[in-house]
Amino acid sequence: MVRCPFCSGETKVVDKRDGEDNTRRRRECEACGKRFTTYERADISLMVVKKDGRREPYIREKIRSGLIKACEKRHVSLETIDQAVDRIEKAVRDTDEVSSKEIGERVMTELRNIDKIAYIRFASVYREFDDLTAFEREVRLLKT
Image (tube, rainbow, N blue to C red; front, side, top):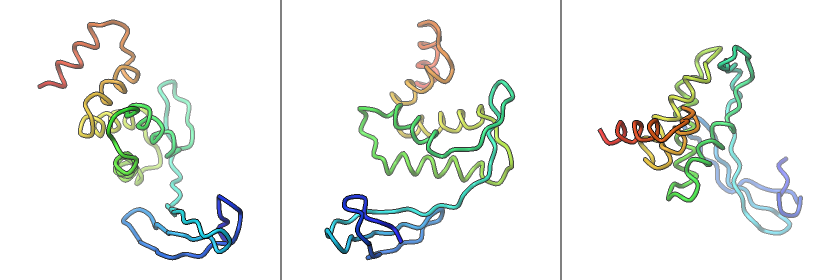
């Protein structure tokens, strides 16, 4: 039983939709009447190999938060961000391990298609720009 996040009352499902990668349930609290949405996703047992060789479990929320930070104060919806995370996850889910570099490049590709400013923001951190020349070079590449 899923409890209401507002009053901890019992909830009922008022709508259920199965998507390609998740199940969306619209719920209503029987006590306070407020509605909210929950998502059910498959658990992915995937390891991410970091630059220094360390391995850590794949955490979807890390990719999502990176995209949200890059898109801060831009006109990009959370739905668009979640769809990008779904595409990234779908591309890597059939393997046991994925490099952080591959995930970063996939994030860059998604951002390039979503919002050019968000792409540059992310690229400046991901590619560790240390001077204006690197920044200018990336902008030139983006224009072509």
